[in-house]
Length: 597
Image (cartoon, rainbow, N blue to C red; front, top):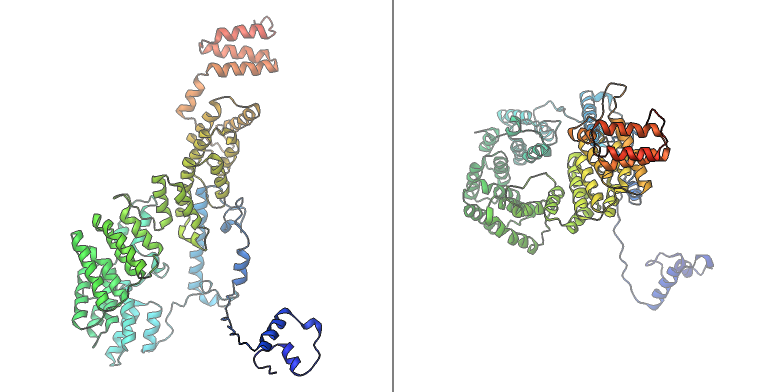
C-alpha cells in the first residue's frame, strides 16, 4: 500500500510491516484507514493559511473582558491622581493630552536626529519622526516623485518646470499624480500638522455646533484660481487622458469652480474619453449647485447617471451617497426620489453605508432643524428624542457594542452629547430602576452627567416615588463637582422637604441637609462655594407651621426647655399665628423656671 496520498504514520508503518504501538492509534487514523481500504476517494480541501498580526493575541484577550463600569475611562487610568471628576475636568484633560501630543510631534519632527532609535515592536510609524524634508537634490523624475509623496506642492511644481525647461519629458502617469496633488490642495501648500480629512467644510460646520461663535476664518476656504498651475500643466500636456481630466474636474468641484468643471467634462466627451466613477461622483455632488429649480437639479443628476450607464461605468456606494446628498437640496422632490434610489442600490447589490443613511435621514428630517454633528448616532438620537421611541434608541445603543462602532461617536464633545440625549430619553420614558441601571453603567466610565441631566434624574425619581435614593445621588453630585449649582441643590432640597418619609430616610435627608449647609460657609481661602439665591432666602424668611411643630417635637424628645423658649421667641418676633399654640404646648409639656415663664 502506498503512502503518497495520506502521510499518516499508521499507513506508513503498515506498509513496512512494522509493529504499531497502541498509543499511536486514534479515531482519525482508523477512519482514514477504513476509507482507504474501501477504495473510495474523498476530496481533501486544504484551508487557506490565515496570517495573524502582531496584536492578534492582545485583541483576543481584550475580547474576553468587559468594560469596568465603576472605573473611569481607560484613557485616564494611567494617572489616577489626575483622573477627571467633572465634565469640565474631562474636557480639560483631553485638551491637555492633545496639547502634549502636539508638543511631542513638534520636538520629534524638529529634532529627528535624537529620535532614531525604534524601541516599539512591532514598528509604530506615528511614534517615529516624519520624513518631511526632501532627500534627493538632483533634478529628475525621482525627485519629482519624492515631492509628490511628501505633498510639497510648490516644490513639485518647480521640479516639473525645471524638468520641462531641460527638455526632459515627464511621464504621463507622473504628470497625473502631480495634477492630483495640485487639485487636492487647490494649488496651495497643505498644513502639515493637520490631517487632510480634518480640513473640510463639514468640520467647520461641526465646530459651529459646539457653541463657539462663527469667526471670519470659518468662511475662508481655498478657491479655484483662474489659470492656476493645475490648468497650466494640463494645457502643456500633449495628450491628456481620462485620469488627467478627472483630476482637474474633481479639483474644480472640490474648490468651488463648478461651471468650469462641467465645461471640462464636455471637453472630455468631445475628445472621446470616458470618465471614471470618481469623476462622475464629483459631478453628481456638484449638480445641485449648478441649477436653480429642483426639477432641473434632478434632471441633471439623471442625465449623469445615464451617461455612466452609456459609458459602462459601474456605480459604487459613493455614487449613490452623492445622489442622496444632492437630493437634500431638492426639497419635496428629494423625498419622492429617495426611496427609489435606495431600492436601486439594493437591486445592484450595493450595501448602504453609514453616510448613506445619514443623507437619507437628512432628506426626510424636519426642514430647518437638521444639524450636522458629523456623526449619525447623535443625529439619530435627536430623532428618537423627538418621537419618544425607546425601542429604536436601544437599537442604536446596541450598535455601539458591535466591533469598533464606538469610534463613530468621535471626540469627547460628541460623546457627551450622545450619552446626554440617551440619558434624557431614559429619564422621560423608562422606569426608575432601568434609569438607575443605565446611570450606574454609563457613569463615570463613559459619561459625566451635567447639571441638567442630574435634574432629569431627580424628576425620574420623583415620578416613581423613589426619593430615598437622593442621598446616594448627592454623593455623585459632589464627586462630579455640581454641588456649586444653586438650582440643582435647591431642587434636591425641595424634593426632600416636600413630604414626610420613614425615619431612616428622614435621617439620611438630614445628613444631606447638613452637608449642604456647609457649602454656604466661607472656606479657609475666603471663598463661598454656594451663594444664597432669592428662593433660598425666601424659604428662610418665614418657617411654615408644620416645620415649627416638628422642631418642637424634637426639642420635647430631648427635654430642652431653653430651646423651646427660644423657639417661642423666634415665632413671636415674626408675629406668626402659631405663636399662641406654641406657648401653650411649652407651658404644658416642659418644666419652666420663673425666668422662662
